[in-house]
Image 1 (cartoon, rainbow, N blue to C red):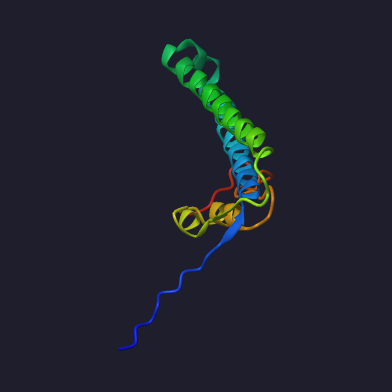
Image 2 (tube, rainbow, N blue to C red; image 1 turned 90 degrees about the vertical axis):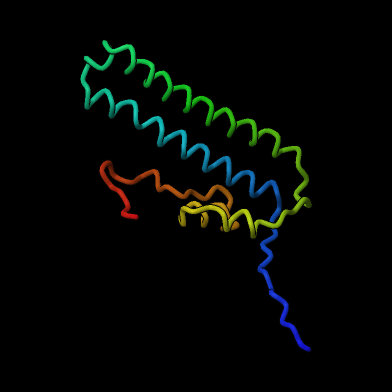
Length: 128
């Protein structure tokens, strides 16, 4: 009896390279979150600042940006101590990422790839 073995693609890469792509994505996320605050102020006008709930939302946006950047800096810093010889298999992890652009950026092998073009014009969006 002959059975075929299921062959899985193994995508091994240096851990520091992968972590730096994650850092890049986190900076992109912080930038995207940061863009929300001025839009809220533009849509709601100065009256937005009169509502305690709106102020809490704006403070939450600031906190989300600070935390995202803090995590990015933390990963960036510890990455410098990880030997390039340390490799990991990305196959399963990359298959779990649902956004195609992010999947490409994280698994591309390109250092500092971005899933979200930061130069997109305001109002640009993708249908999904």
